[in-house]
Every structure is written in C-alpha cells, then in structure tokens.
Length: 109
Length: 114
Image 1 (tube, rainbow over the protein chains, first blue to last red):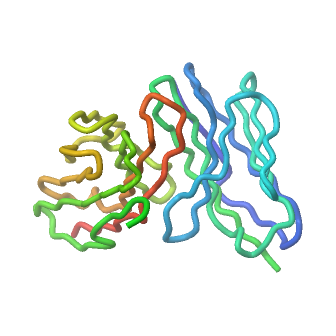
Image 2: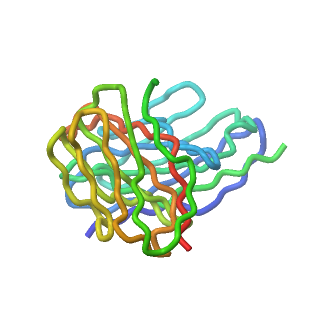
Image 3: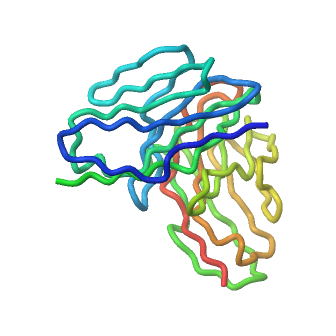
C-alpha cells in the first residue's frame, strides 16, 4: 500500500532552524514535493526532490533518501511569516500526488 | 486573470441541492485536478483531467462529477449535496499529466452543506 506521514504540529523560535520530517511508503515513486500553506490560503510550491541528497533554495532546503522513504524540509533563520502548514507529497507511479496531512509550524518571537 | 481562479469563494448549501464549483486557468496547462481538504487529512484527489476532453476518477470521486470541454475550464458538480461534502475544495493545474511538473493551486472554495 501507500502511506505518508509527517508530524501534526511543531513550534520553533524566530531566527532559529527547524527540520520537518516526512516518511512515506510506496511501490512506485516519481519524486517528493513540499508545499507551504498559510491559513485560509492555497498551497504554494516550495521544492521537488527526485534524487537522493539535499536541494538548497535560499533559507529553505529539502532532503531526500529514497532507500529510507524519508524526506525533510529545513527552514533556516525563521521569520514570523514562516508560520504556516507544510505539506509533503510523493508522486506515485501514475503521476498522482499522495499528500501528507501537513505539519503546522508555529513560530514564537 | 493570471493563474487559476475559483468561484465561488465560499458557499452555504442545503443538503440535496445541486452545486457547481467553477475553475478556470489561463496558463494553457494540459492537466487539471480537483482536491478536497479536510482537517487532519491530506489533500485528497476527487477527479482529474489529463487533457481537454478526458477525465478520470481520483481517490474520492463518489458524489462528484467533472467535465473538461476546453483547456481552460474544469467545473466540479455535486449532483445532490450531503453534509459529508462540507470541505475546502481546491482546483489545481500542471503543464503535463504524465510528468513531474509542479501543480499550481487556485484559492479554494469553502463549501458548507447543512
């Protein structure tokens, strides 16, 4: 079967670093996506990983290990505007996205 | 318009009524999708369309229908609404269906069925 899991909620301090983990199980894999979703808004694309390793994009980085079925999103120099939900999703063999329930990130001053 | 638009923004609907949620994109994307988002659950695919004239069922298609008469529009119809269809509905599009292209989302429609 297919499943994907990420923590429900995390809290971090402004200026700090936070790592949001995502684990998945699937027989067919075409990459791992991370989206950001502010409350009441649409999800917006952050990153895509299909090969193992770290992809860095400014303050945000995303890591993938296909053998472990594991990814993480790393947010550095946290700002209050980073308070949002972070959704991970893998693309299955039919090119459809299977979504986690999202991790709500709370940033405290 | 730029990107994806959805209408209405929100709607309260009596159970048993018929409702069509509208979605339009101006990016000339081939693929379009309808998702529902419920608290504590991930986005769930309702229906999708790989290209104009074709549609397919997603994970939770029951009670919903779609059509794709042209590239830009992808309406979602609830034939007879039930309270369990209370949710936030997102339309999305991507340039290719059988590819790893990024999906772009509309602003969503918040639907309450009483």
